[in-house]
Length: 422
Image 1 (tube, rainbow, N blue to C red):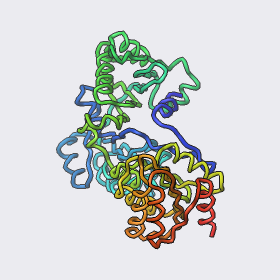
Image 2: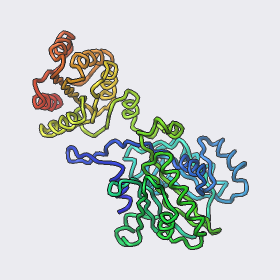
Image 3: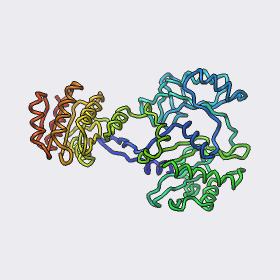
Image 4: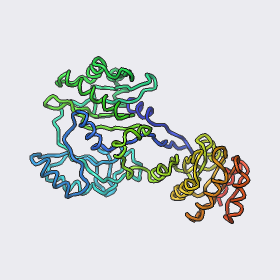
């Protein structure tokens, strides 16, 4: 399955308490309208469209940009798939509609500021802060196009299919021969021959072959120059006037490239992300929210994974993955506690620190200050070992806080599970 392959390449999953948990993705996801603007800058054909955030803006756009359009496409902008089949919490069905121009204002009013629930958002849904108003195109053919990073070929891989606009997974399963994969030499870049193979895989009905090849090359240029991890167009459409148009696209960018892609990373929309992960990123903490009851604060990814495994072994469920790293400051420890206690599902907190570079006395001071600032209302189990452990234990003992100390990781997990059972 092509989309399944893309998902495997761009994300991983963790399983805790019998449930699959989505691991934090190390990439930037931008809205459809932002992707369209970026593609347009690279000369890629996209539908004419404008994103709006208020009803007044809707009126102005219709009058100035689409004065002669009888129908428009109204697309809710959330960072999740399945918008067309989604449902708003106010009862409106579908996050994408084609309506008469005089109905756009009313429909946009029912979308803006509302929560859209799709198969990818979870039951909590995501807020729609903008809608994307687009011209309605006369499409004669729909295809699938994507560029992703492929481990096997150690470089970009272009995936093309003559059928698009529907489930690419089903097509790949039923008609595997319809999927064309063209690996690109990352050092040479895309060649005319590579682009021609992709166009042959797309099999456009009337679009000029040379123009189509140029569109493919422009898409690859965008992918490589902006540090994309995924560029997916579904559908890549053919219009009645024989043009290839990126009718709907999804673009992701490598977080490691944020330092040289400042303009693109300025497009990040934190309202579409887990607020705890946003806060953790600001504090330079590695945090992934899960569904359990025991909040974890650990230094080191390996120790964090071990801590979650031991919690599960002892009958508990971890509420998060939180790695404070090897050089965390006292302030970062305080922020970590604020993030943990902001989760209503957390019934106990387990702090597991093995001090190497990270000193136990720094963690202990952070715990004490955090307890004073956030007014801890749940039991806190602390296991410290390593550099300055005696100083750390003394700080905790002299704090007067009702902390539960543990001698080792297994003891800590037992006490954390017992704490939520009382």
